Length: 136
Image 1 (cartoon, rainbow, N blue to C red):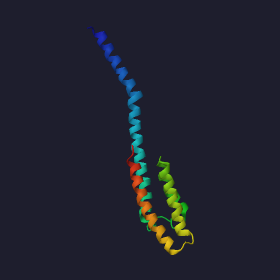
Image 2 (spheres, rainbow, N blue to C red; image 1 turned 180 degrees about the horizontal axis):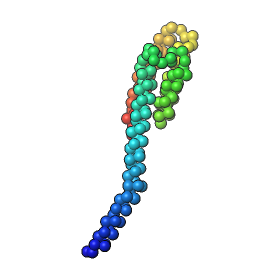
Image 3 (tube, helix red, strand yellow; image 1 turned 45 degrees about the horizontal axis):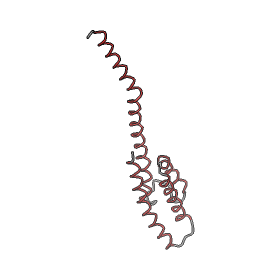
Image 4 (cartoon, rainbow, N blue to C red; image 1 turned 30 degrees about the vertical axis):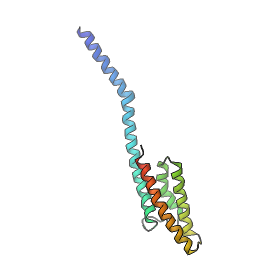
């Protein structure tokens, strides 16, 4: 075997590997980096929403007790990152009932019932957010 064909084969191999690197490996790396970034963003947004869902307004960090738009502002970060339309609708529904409980004239016994319903719904939403976070 002569040196010219050996060098030519090595050069061709290097060119093929570089083409694979540019076309395939970079896409794999980019996809992996995007998934990591998306998971980090979801974790931040879901943590903030989870704090509200579980505290049911006790946390004084947010002014959601009299302003449903504040709640929507916080939830919007999570909603933008969720692909599941049903989960998005559940979050909107939770906020609607939250506002109804706080800002409408509802008899005390109905408020208590709605409060416990929202507490359970918040726990279920948290579980669904966890599932969405761990989805690939």
